[in-house]
Structure formats: C-alpha cells, structure tokens
Length: 324
Image 1 (cartoon, rainbow, N blue to C red):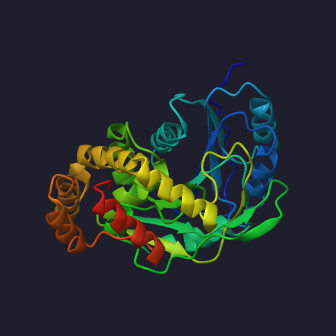
Image 2 (image 1 turned 90 degrees about the vertical axis):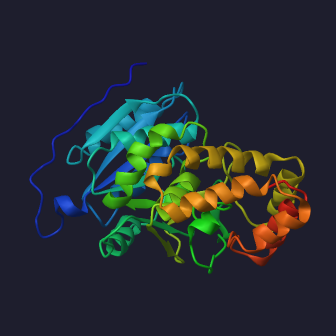
C-alpha cells in the first residue's frame, strides 16, 4: 500500500467566514483505525469553523485506514488534505512530526482517530486563542464514552492555575482537545527536534508553552466524545481503578521514569524556555540527590503541584520515597 502526500487547492475563500489568520491545520496520527475513523472524519467535516485543512500521518496501517482517508480526501475536495507516511516511532513522535509538517499554520489542532468532535470545537478554540498576543494552547475537558459513544461521565474539572510548576508533574488536558496558536508553534516546531525521549506529545506541549512564558487556556466545557475501547493508548483518568494505577506507577518507578524522560527533553530545549523555567527543571533534577529532609523542604518551596488534593498527596509520597 503506498501512502502519498497530496495537496488539493483551496477554493476562493468566503471573506465573511474565514481568512488566512483563522485557518486551522488539523493534525491526525493514524494506525489501523478503520473501525472508528470515519466517525471522526465526519465530525471534522461538520465543524462550524470551516476554515481548516487536514494532515494525516499514518504509522504503517495494514487495514483499510488509507482507503477511508483517501475517500474522505476526495469527498472534501474544497479542503486541503495531505496524507503522509509516519516515522513509526510511536504516537508521540508521530504527532511531533505532524507539528513540523504543519509549517506556517496560524493554528494547529491535534486529532485522534477514534474520537468524535462537537461541531463547535474549533470555533470555540479559535475564539479564545485569537485574543492572545503570546504563546498559548487551548485545551478542554472531554465526555468519556463507551465503545458505542454512550456517555459515561465528563473528565475531571481542574480548577487550579495551569502553570509550568503544574506541567512538570501533570498534563491537564488530552492532546485530542488541544489547539495551538502561531506564537506557541514558534517554540514547539523547532524544539520538537530535540524531544526524542518524551512520554507524550501533549504533556510536552503543555510544559514547553508554559515554560516558554505562554498560557494554557482551559475550557471547562467538553469539546468531544472520548471513546474508550481496548486499543486506547491512554484511557480515562478518573475513578478508583485509575487512582490505583497511579499508585502502582509510583511504587514500581514508572512515574519517576516518565519524569526522567520529560526532564531530559526540557533540558535539551533550554533555549526556548524562560530562565525561571530552566531553574525549575534544574531544581527538580537536583532534588532527587538530596537527603530526605532536604528533599521535603526543597519540594515544599518549589511550587510544584498537581491539580487535586489526592494528586498532591500522591506527589508528596513520591518525594518521600524519592520516586519523583
């Protein structure tokens, strides 16, 4: 099966509805997504914000994914749709390759292959981002559904400030909800070349933009249906089972390994971070070398924290047992 990069020319835009300044490039990473991808593509086609293009990077699908996206490209000939061969180094690196492929886009939006977007998803994001004169990412809550898109509940609402100190130890919104402005892309696109070890692209984006002096715009209203099924790479993050999984990750050192990967990427991207952010990264790295008492004191004054009380208790446990 051959994957090609195909550009379809834009028709003359309607100036009353869109301009080059509010164009959104949607970035979709795919891999054997034939079962659910059509519903996601249909929800993109149904966006009230019609000024979008789509880049799909496929990581070696062996099912009908290519046929489905190719048919969508033909049906949506009024939009520019590009299909690329992915790097086949995992989902995070696939999305980073898409960031670089988006070029001089005004905005980019990450898209998973198995969600369903609400019709106003892009419109709401652009409305908030267009007011920003610096680096900014928009993200939102989601509606968690079963495999048949029956809504079970909404994702946790995080009410505390979305800062770099929070981003060091937590991601507050899934990449499937994120829309990123041009100022933030000026940081993320070149820095992505250094991010070879990251755990997830969305967490890294949150860290890099807030660490680069930008803002995270958090929408408490969900923007999509987040389908849960056996092949989800990252599933729901709420409830007792999710809490037990977080505890197990602390005990077995997985959380510490994740922090290691993210710190390595941030350390490689110092030139795009503020002096204050770089100092925070160094402090977190050095904290692990301290004695118990010194470590606890350093952490207490560091400002590093998660969004919930339960999360912060777990974070203190990682510091206590030197698993951060």
